[in-house]
Image (cartoon, rainbow, N blue to C red; front, side, top):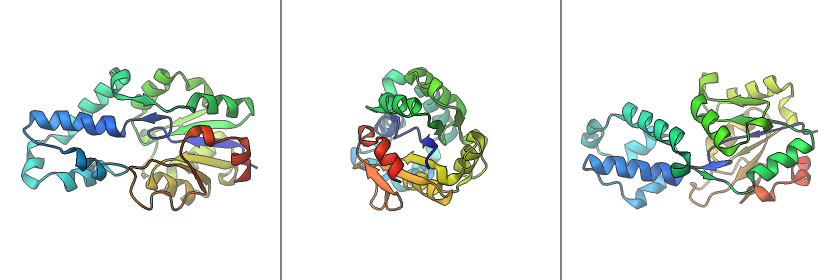
Length: 216
């Protein structure tokens, strides 16, 4: 019996993939580096290090202070979410439905805790969640199951009592490695094979209902 639903944040409750890419484009343009629109295909669903290795030359990478860039992006997104972040339709309605039916809820994200806290406040959804975990709480990144196993422990449930809602290959892999069911939220810009491990997929959150969750 499913007792808990665990939400990834970015790509599930909020959208920032395209906004992050545009932020990088504007930043690099000031450094004299042209990041083409077509380069977005290298960004979607991938780690930043791999993305930069694909789109920048060795000489270009020497120009960029990546630690400074990451910090600047974090500050901008935290302080101006209306400019950089888009709410995913159906998120609040789904949370209300699940809470009304006594599911335990958690946010599970590899963003920093400050960013997650800012987004939860901006979305006005903090009250729905019993547990919020960030990259600051773990040692091993997704697809390692650590973050989801920790969430189950904190919620007081077992892995087979959890459904995870994810949108990335590593996130889905993490959920499955933890022994949990997983709903993949599909994006057409994600690489082929992203959702192969998901138990089922949806195109939007409004497709997720009690029947779907209880059927897993």
